Length: 380
Image (tube, rainbow, N blue to C red):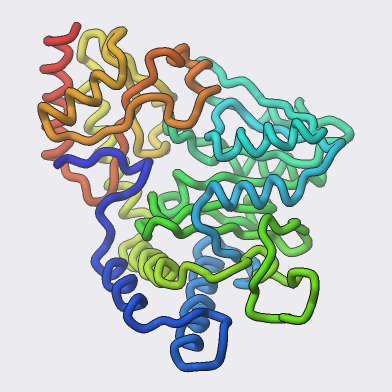
């Protein structure tokens, strides 16, 4: 199988990640729940991975990293834990439903919502955020990289705008954490939401959020914490404030191994390989008659994603043909990005998304491009 759905999840993980998860399943107890050797070993591992992640995102305090199951949980915590009735929040049509649906819930509770439109390339410029700010604006919430088009927003510039107006800046780094250097201090990020199973090359069921010192977040869940058992309220100190219940210690061990792999291999090396594969694919398919590519390809830096359609063919039909006839796995349909599809005019058709990983090859790129050329001749 040629697997090109890495924007959904990377299917191949580094060997140390697999080994770390397997080893953890054989030896780790419940972190923070007791002083037996297995529990203490789990606690040490969780702390060490917090340290790794804090350094990875250039944070100043490992306790500001809280673990979650994925970006969706992180974004729900960030959005529902900071906004209240009467607040105004600015976001964009580029967003994944993991941002949009929590925002819609908060809108129903009295939060005012502005969704900035995209231009013809599927981009939103920083100036648009500045122009949308009102007296009661509380936060700017946006993706770093679109999961549909692969376009990158200038979060450093947007962060400066948020800081200049004393606004919270919440960033969805689902598609970018692991291949683009994210500096939460320089980029003025208040809350960074990330997942472990995509470009970070970690296990599914892992993720987290970085919460800047001084930013208060109401917990989404309360309950077991391993500390302050006789207190009626859930502990308020980070990171336990946002980590109710048993953690995914096995997954966290794998996530730590993934971060270590990225650090040792070099994020720049990984990114350049993935972008090289993406650009090679882009060059090979853009001369196919009837093939339409979406997104902004004027700049080299972008997520390693190419999204397209073959004429008016339903995207699911193209995806099924690639899978059944060529054993090539891609993503089709709406990609959990309904507003971006409406902006592109593809809400009914959907789109075919090809996304690359460090472990893909030039041969796979060429085979996929040739398969599309054959399909175009057959279907168009």
